[in-house]
Length: 98
Image (cartoon, rainbow, N blue to C red; front, side, top):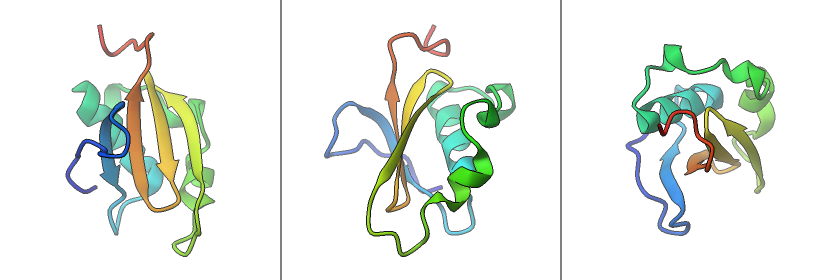
């Protein structure tokens, strides 16, 4: 996963990163949430309780023109873009923000 950065196009994003060349999209989502929430990835709820990781990993081919998938996971609104970006937005009822 690339270094986290604030999304200049969306000031509400608490973290925006790119999926690494050798990293699955689902792994990038879990890593981003773990880093943002300062929680070990193993302490996060299973991603498959929210979205099918295999489907997420195969959703956007490398030549995808556009699109995005939005879902809530571990207290964050996650936006996965066809361009290989993962953006996190805090939700009001985040159990990890306490």
